[in-house]
Length: 474
Image (cartoon, rainbow, N blue to C red):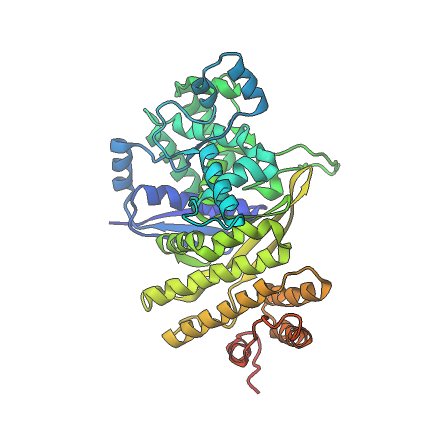
């Protein structure tokens, strides 16, 4: 049985390219492929899928393509409330978000939001008894429906993607899959040719009345407006091939299939947080990792009490603390995964780091900057059990210190910035600066804040002696 290989070319928007690769992996994961490896080749990602093309196509003929994205219904908007008051059935309004007989997951966001709010109120009031649970994926849905761009992604873009993929389900699943294989089966990815083929050869045969919900039924367009939540650098602005330059705020259009797969990747590996009106989205940058292994790490991360608590309180934290605690928690779960699966987990540098994208609230959330938090340089690539145990202690100690520093004063922010700079650049001098500044701060606060945790000598020694960038043993 021969493996399949697919390629996702890296474009100007690294986030979208990375999420498309994860989205493709999600499709094959739902098709029960045994092994799915994602590798960074430099200019492109490669997916090696451990199943034959013939077997996958046979599964699609018998059961169709999986509906990878969940359909999300949300509380009615102001205009939808008026339609309800005028007597229009709720089912008719929900058709925009939930296709008829949809076979994928269905999320009632209003109900999930109530659970989250009840849980927060119970914790805030310190009520006795059971605190309501919220789904680990709730932050992903909340960023679509509530926090990101005031829910702009849910007005047209996301629901249209759900309907367009679902429109192929009766007779055209195999045609859509063949298009995916043609688009990503070789380099470079011929996106314009794929879009033209879909317009001419597939779309005319889709008997799908719900396209009328989006005024798309008579149009030959295959593109939809890029959504900055999965495509930040192409959300606004444009370029021209002529020498004349002009500035405009028109959003760019992207082939709908690319955006569908990018959202599938967002659901699989996205880690969003809120920071006041601003939002942050983190995702892992792959080097060579098995998709099942990555999903296990992400599931443990999203379910962990530390991350749930961080999300609950992130709205009251400075961004620098969210950056540090989110990546420390992720690498902690990664170390846990290698501890449990050692020695079969492979090299620990399966990812190159964690990428964080920051969106600033300026009437709506706009892309602001991107930061890569590298794999901790003090982690040995093929760790022993003793090295993994040391890594757990180092990460736990860093997390305790970051939580203890409130970030309300400039002195605390400077200390946190030293540690953040170390986690992005890996220069041991930055960790030394952090250790010195924190030591002085803790000594100065012995009376006022005696609970501040120690930075132990063993952590300092392990970080510096195991650092691959510079030899600090002397």
